[in-house]
Image (cartoon, rainbow, N blue to C red; front, side, top):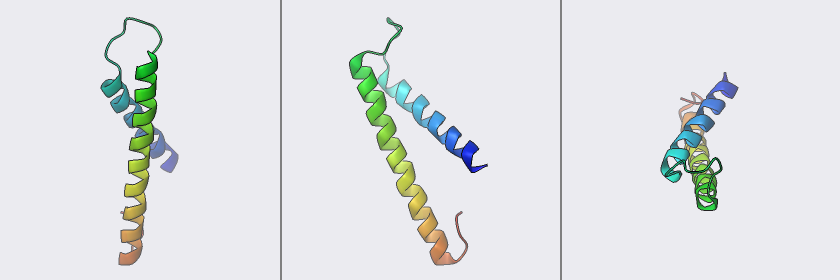
Length: 68
C-alpha cells in the first residue's frame, strides 16, 4: 500500500513539473533547459513531501497515535 502511494506521489510530481517546465512539443527530446527545469522541480517537490511527511510523523508521535 505504501509503495502504491509513493508511486502516485512521484507521478503527481512529474506531471506537475512537466506541465510547468515543458512549453512545446517541437522536438521528440526535451530541450536542455526543460530537462534541467523538470529535474530541479522534481527534487524540490520530493524534498517538500519528505519534510511534510516527517512533520506529520513527529506530530503523530507527540499525540501518541502515529501517522495521520
